[in-house]
Image 1 (cartoon, helix red, strand yellow):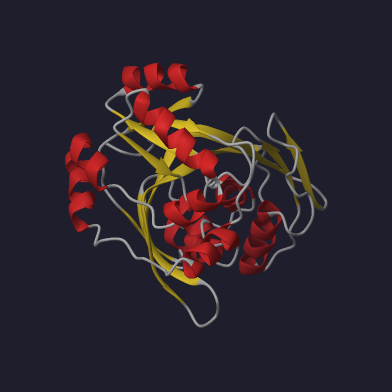
Image 2 (cartoon, one colour):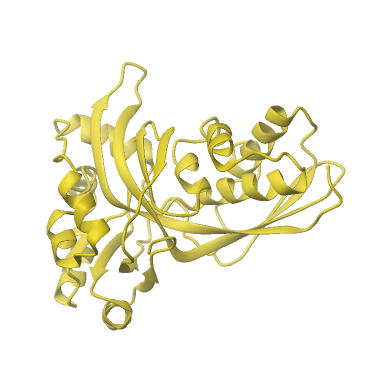
Length: 285
């Protein structure tokens, strides 16, 4: 361990510019293809030297966050320590602003930020690709959030490559209930497992910054199954469209709904109209 500390890392929430469920695997998981975009709504993670492994969670969204061994931050710390051949000794402070079980990847973002912070604190010296390999042992969404910018993720999320996209602006409308990813994928199975189109044209529109084309092409294969069980999601989508959003899309497995906007001022207008959160993309050009 180095004498550094504390090490602070942002843990941005994410949204999925598209989410394509390819198939249900024999092990019960699903192969997906998705473009993961970090946004400006973020938690923060601080790693400090300690004689043991400690986790402290504070902030407006701290309630409901597990503190035990099932917390992804704890799992990330233990996975990196095992990789480095050292004891998992650190005090990890998580400041929670991202809603829990909202489809925004908050827990996964915290784990990815913890990996980056501990990689520096412990002097592991792992590059992003090797760190993403450790992240794959922690959770399906964690590798995509290690890089801190937009990525294309495939398989169970372990195959990740950075992509170039133009900046986009969104309004997030969280809901007052949670949706587990396991339920969302089970509902996709139950509803017949419809797979969305090849995303090549959408990815080109994202690179070009053609927001009107993106609005017409963005999709989430989990949206119909989840909205079919939770009518509040369709209500939120309707409110966003009525307020002027170009597209309203379920975030991940939900239940947060994101409205695509033309630019930052437009996002602020839509957010004020629906009581949402205006955000911009991170790591895009």
